[in-house]
Image 1: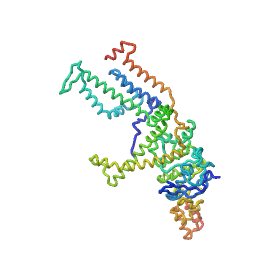
Image 2: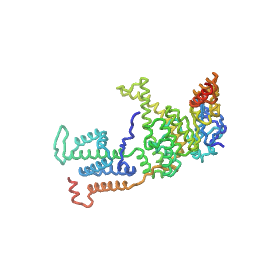
Image 3: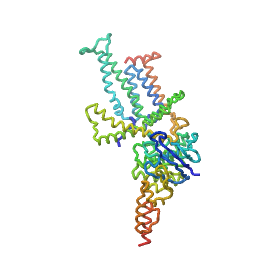
Image 4: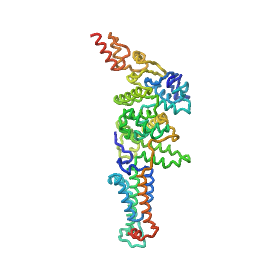
Length: 281
Length: 280
């Protein structure tokens, strides 16, 4: 069984009123331990609701969500759920509690009642993991967006979660900040075996995951590895961009160049073109 | 981005900065009580020397301390002149008279003492906030008020609210500047001389600020929930406040001062030298 399972989950905001908005409609999927999964979709596709459902911040109206085998409806074990699956949100300014970075990172471990020495060790480890140890005593106010978001990741990491859900955590950052955050989460996935669920509307970011689940209107529209980017028409139909390198590759294929399928990143394209150039001089 | 200092904290490495914030808070309160026990210039002199000693050992530039007095300058001048003008003592002959007012020697002495008392009263808490961060002050208040939680007063919740408010001050102030800039770009006028127009111009700033604060609060609540926040129950702290030797030293120094001042005032053992000093 996967570390996170969604079983026919539905969620409606403001249920029973005139403003009822059905955000998630009967979604089922599994996320396995150690995986790097991207949840992609345009605004309003229900992807942020999935993040909140995955650690019990919201409870499904229908269906069941389990985290490490624990049902999120289980009130007694809700903190076990949240320790297992941590969420990093979009705006770093809105998830910091303390005025000093190390105090903020310590917030989670303090909440679960660890001994002071253990908290200290985890804070130092988490700040090291995101490369922000040098700023431990500084105030978050002076940091760049990417640095702030790395501190927010450290704050979740200090709880030693097995799954980290990043809910549009790069959306408010500039390209450099986005790159910083992506580097950190890929490192966590590789070195610490943290399962990553990356929620994003940037297809270039989604393309870096092992598996991509594309959501549209509260349902799963496409799912699979990077080969889904070759289904450009389907992606376009639900309002998502195909990454530029994929588009270029596709046009080149259409014009008779022999390129492999599944080109997503710039590096893929460059490599494929180099191979091609050697083959047909 | 604007530079916003947190309160008036003066960052420096010193013994005073490192003292236990709880002790500093208690000593400051004791100090303010002490100020009211002093009735002689000699007593105020001792306290001034003490305050200067603390200022120097905290490595605070004395000018910085004087700057905090600027805010009470008007109050100070006002109280001094009122005391001087309306002081009346029928047992004493006035040393000067002007219009309907008469001035007495003891009137000058009294207003001088009053000025000393006011200045010293302000300096105490100023030294506290200069050497202690708002965060550790909040922690100190939480720790000192802990007994109140036995009678179901949510001390931890109040302290949490305080520290989140402190944390959000720079964020909200930055946001306010952004909103002002946005409204100015659309032709809002914040520089009108008319106070009614100026008050009215605040509305398009306050409403967006309110709305965004609520949104922030909502998101922060989600973030705190997902980081396992469940109130004071079962919560530990990374930084434990511990009583150190320097705290005992500070306590003893202050205790000696406290005792000395009270001795000058009450002279329990009727020592002659005490009487001599206090007459002076």
